[in-house]
Picture 1 (cartoon, rainbow, N blue to C red):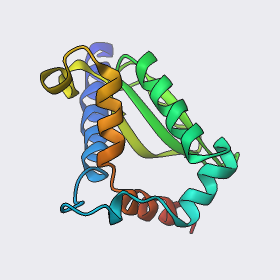
Picture 2 (tube, one colour):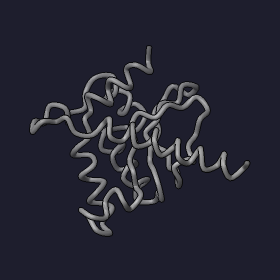
Picture 3 (spheres, helix red, strand yellow):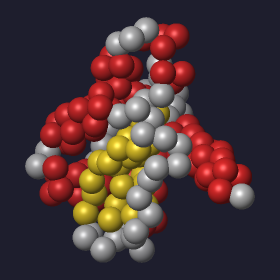
Picture 4 (cartoon, rainbow, N blue to C red):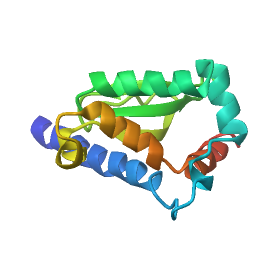
Length: 143
């Protein structure tokens, strides 16, 4: 029974993580307007990380250390954003935390295009995040 429960959480984690990951990528349609971060999400990132650049540096450093996933999450109890690492599909925090950004750091996410250069993959990830989609997720949490 234990093995079935662990495998279920791994499979379900993979579904949920990839749904979030793909929901915030793309839809930029050759423009840069969706790649610009603004509004309450930008303000919260500046408050919690000091600057958007600091946020990206923390996310990238987390991504270089992770074996599976990095999430930016809203902690409802602390009323702040933070980045955290999960080394497997089913290793994620659940106590008053809701993820709004998911970065897949498994090799399948980057190896074909970036080889072993995970850093260039993470840079490309940031170039393709649709921040309007992330802002929408964030604003729904704040209601």
